[in-house]
Amino acid sequence: MSSISGKTKICGIIGDPIEHTMSPAMHNAAFGALDLDYIYLPFRVRREELKGAMNGMRALNIAGLNVTIPHKSDVIPLLNKLDPLAGRMGAVNTIVNEDGKLTGDNTDAPGFLRALRSKGVEPDGKKIVILGAGGAAKGISFILAGAGASLVILNRTLSRAEELASQIASYYGRKLTAMTLSEKNLKHTLDGADVLVNTTSVGMVPDVGQTPVPSGLLKPDMTVFDIVYNPRETRLLREAKAAGARTIDGLDMLVWQGALAFEKWTGREAPFEIMKGAAVKALGHER
Ligand code: ATR
Image 1 (cartoon, rainbow, N blue to C red):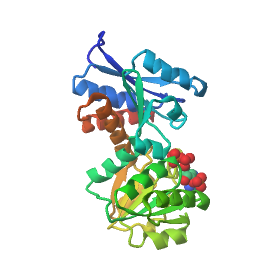
Image 2 (cartoon, rainbow, N blue to C red):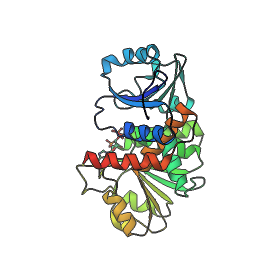
Image 3 (cartoon, protein in one colour):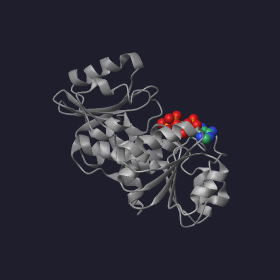
């Protein structure tokens, strides 16, 4: 964004709270780099104002919005159209406005897949162990199963892992294993695993001394992906690196989800490295 004119297109993010978002930094850097006449703004929207915000998006002709906590599922009935993957996730993180018709999309799980592939890891035919069974695990598990991976889901609460495994099994018609997240089950499932994905909040600020996996179970031929991005290097990633494993951090997923949203709004290829640089800087300011 060089200067605002009568033609400037408006994008933004809605959520509550919103003060800590890194998305304005990423998107405004990208608009600037490509010299696009767009601006990206944060909007704090309370739950009870969500319907008004969607009508406001139409009335004010806001071109695109990201959606974050707590609105990702509540926004769905307020839209005109829904991408099938977002529908299956039950979560929308990106809205595109075409002449007042709002389409909901989800770039979180596709962002995860791009981050994985951009590091040279193709999930097709791989054994992937997923820790956690919350909202993030759901998107990631669906997209990995769709990409041909064989999955094992481990969660502290077994019933949630079983519920997620059965949803995926019934959608893809393929069996997958659900287990309690315990050292014994980790030892068993990590044997022969190609990729380990942590979607739990274990190791996130302020609990930076915690890890979901004992270091002795990490192996050099594994890829370890931790979707936590604060800190960027969690204890799990530090120990995985020390064990000789390939590591991918949560910032890559965050930046790819932003890059994919940017492409939906602008029709242009996102400048990934510029967006990542802006996100790294914004994360530094958070500390
Ligand atoms: P998100 O949308 O980020 O996935 P979530 O739906 O709240 O967030 O899910 C958080 C995940 O982290 C869950 O899998 C949770 O396990 P439970 O289903 O048993 O609650 C997991 N989690 C959170 N704290 C944990 C801890 N201390 N040990 C193990 N797992 C934990």
